[in-house]
Image 1: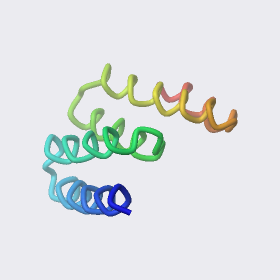
Image 2: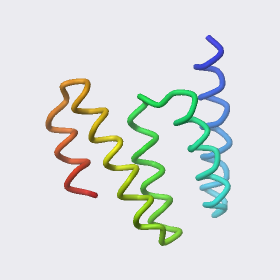
Image 3: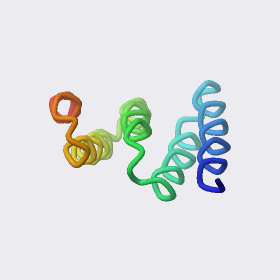
Length: 87
């Protein structure tokens, strides 16, 4: 549907920006994805990696904690633990 298409488009844009070293723009695109699809855990990990590259460690920690909470909500305890440990 429309959400899936929007996520795919923003993901493509974010990947391109990240690959070209425009991390702030990539972060903005991934943040849009998390707004329209907040339960999509993988994008919180990507956001955390980009935040670290931009030395935004508190934002990285927050993204990992959100990912961990989403994993817990879905019963994925091992993945939740991994996210918490990275934070």
